[in-house]
Image (cartoon, rainbow, N blue to C red; front, side, top):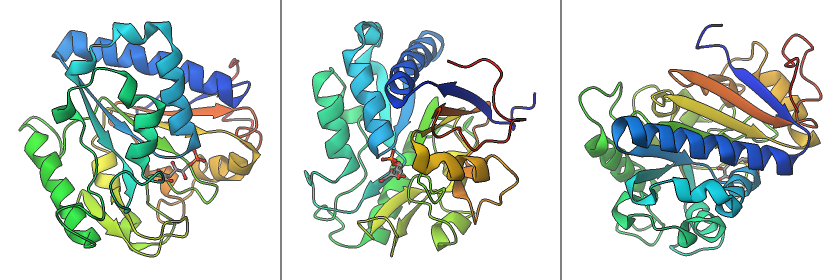
Length: 262
Ligand SMILES: O=C(O)C(O)[C@@H](O)[C@H](O)[C@H](O)COP(=O)(O)O
């Protein structure tokens, strides 16, 4: 199987999906820390991303992670004031980050709308792109680090991060981070990694649970174009993994549905 071909794992329900994904992520982080000294993970907003973080927090294996040697980045952020309950970073802190001994210097939250760039979301996006570029090394494949795992929730319209179908952000081919204006999912103003930044990750994991994701998963895993179906363009350099529950997998063509998943 080519590394460009997404792999699928289907779980009974979203709770099991979150627990299995958390166990998988712990293993991946521990392996990366063992081989390279540190690990880097890109977090996603949304219920499934937060469900994974909560499951990770309740896993006894969480103590296997060296939390001080983990870099955390975000795939997107809702452009709201610091501490706003709708910010992805606020939700991630509540779900897990406040409970583990992370190095604050390695927690790379995206700028808030009351931060140094004020309400200028494009300047905030450019600043985050610079932060990523500073963390990249010459052997990385883009002006962003080669993230070990980049997590993405999938919207019912096939959006990932804040890359919505047909909006300019999904067509970006140069910049690694852009501001989003007029997103169909509230709030309308957001900051997002672009597909070139996402595709610099070693592994991209897409999380989808529930009936309302079934059509999106089927479209993104067929021959859809990335401008119409952004999830179709989210690929990792070494691996692309879709983690689904059975409801989200219910409309997949039989040819894609894995033979033995639980
Ligand atoms: O800021 C956000 O809302 C996101 O990062 C977004 O891309 C999310 O991951 C999907 O909309 C899936 O969300 P659910 O997991 O809640 O369905």
